[in-house]
Image 1 (cartoon, rainbow, N blue to C red):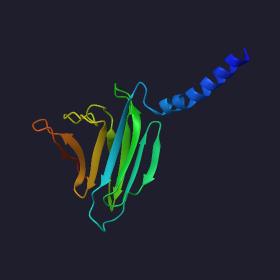
Image 2: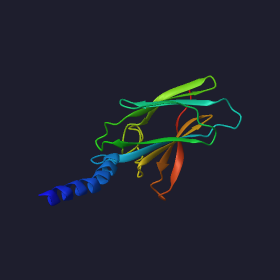
Image 3: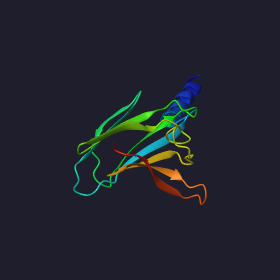
Image 4: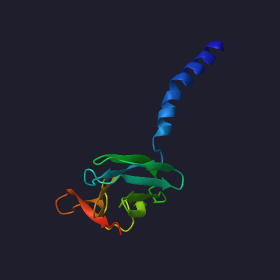
Length: 148
C-alpha cells in the first residue's frame, strides 16, 4: 500500500510541470500575435499607443522609432477576439481595431492572412497592414488608414 502511494506522489510530481506548460498554450484556440512597428521619422514627436481587448488592457506604450510593440494571445477560430489600439502622434490621433478576424487580421480586409500574426506599421501618412500577394506568394505593406 505504501509503495503505490509513493508511486502516485512521484507520478504527480512528474506530471505537474507538464500540465502547467500545457496550460500556457492555446488548447482549443489558435495562438496569434499582433505587431505594431513605429516607422515614423527619426527625431519626430513620441508615438503613444494604448491597446486593449475586452479582457486585457496592455496599457500605454511609447515605442521608439524602429521598435516593435507586440503581444500574443489565444484567438477563437470563430472570431470573437478583438483588440483595438488608440494612437497619438504630435497633434494627430487615431483609434481602430488591429485584430478582429483570425483569417484577415481585420474583418474589412479582403486579403487572407496566411500567418498567425498581424503586422502593422505606423508611418507619417497613416497605418499599414501586411498583406499576402496571391500572385507570387510574397507579403507587402498595404496602406490601410490615414491619420485623419
